[in-house]
Structure formats: structure tokens, C-alpha cells
Image 1 (cartoon, rainbow, N blue to C red):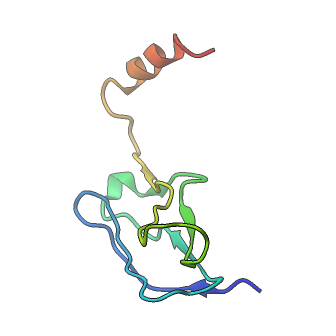
Image 2 (spheres, rainbow, N blue to C red):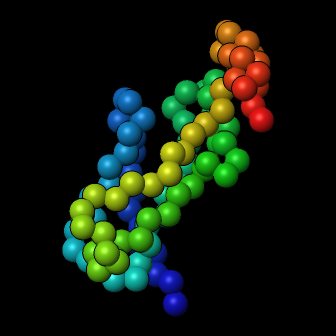
Image 3 (cartoon, helix red, strand yellow):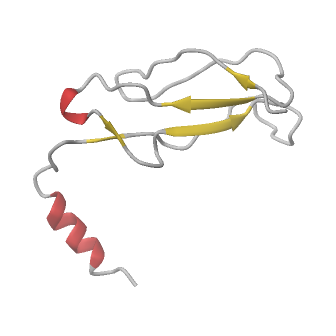
Length: 95
């Protein structure tokens, strides 16, 4: 049976979030889920980047107490100026 650790968190002004988890939680996981964006023009969650999971056990071979989750993000309603030109440049090197 999979147990989930639950706590509310919020990003700082740089978009970084830190969630302290005291003690070992054995087989529990922490699942981060985007809830809302404070920027109205950037409020649609990116598909497949709206959640991340981290195992909370300290007995899984990880030496550090710090674990990192995948990046999460929201889409802007309008692309940034120059974005399409940058994407085209990268596509020139796509195999």
C-alpha cells in the first residue's frame, strides 16, 4: 500500500520551492502538484509537468537528505517575443 505525505507549500519569488520533511517516512512518497499561478497571463499548467513525485525514505541508498523533484511549470498565454525564431534555430540542429 502506497502512503502519501501531505503538506502545503509555496514557491519563492524565483519559483523555487523547498518542503522540509522531518524524519524518515519509510515507504511514503511526496507528490508535488501545481495548484495555481499568481500570474494571470501564465496560469495554464504544462501537461506532464504539473506534478512530480519524490520517495521520502532515507533508506533507499541516497546519501544526502536533499532530494530534487522534476521541474513544474505553467504556460504563458502569449509566446515571448523572439521565441519562434529561437525554436526555429534549434530545429536546424534537430536530427
